[in-house]
Amino acid sequence: MALDFDAVAVGIAAAVTSAAVAVNGQTVTATDFVPDAPTPPHFVVAEFVNEYHQTYGSAGMDHVTVKCRLLTSRGSDAEGQRTLRKLATLTGVGSIPAAIEAARGAPGQMALSGAADDLALVSVTGPRLYEIGAVDFYGLEFSVLVIG
Image (cartoon, rainbow, N blue to C red):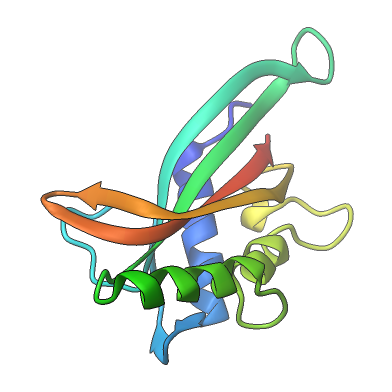
């Protein structure tokens, strides 16, 4: 069975929403798509890279890297970047890494409420500027490995 990319995106966004992650006292909105005009702080599931047949022999399963971004305001160059550096290293309850890892499910169970066989947060990159529409946002990019 092929991996359902839409279900993966919805599941990752739902995991971040349920964690109620906050940035500077504001709860992060999470969507399974990149809106034309996001209101920061906003977590988006952005892009997929699928490497076919990377696992389990010649009839392998999908090996997908999902790029997700946390977008914040550009109110202050210095403070915006400092906030993102803190968020990039934050772990535990209320953090994006913890929210994504919680979507793995218990050992032996499917990840993302059955949408994938497994997932793991691989890396975070940033801070950097992301242009959406005609607006620049400071942000972090999270790479999530999904196998399905």
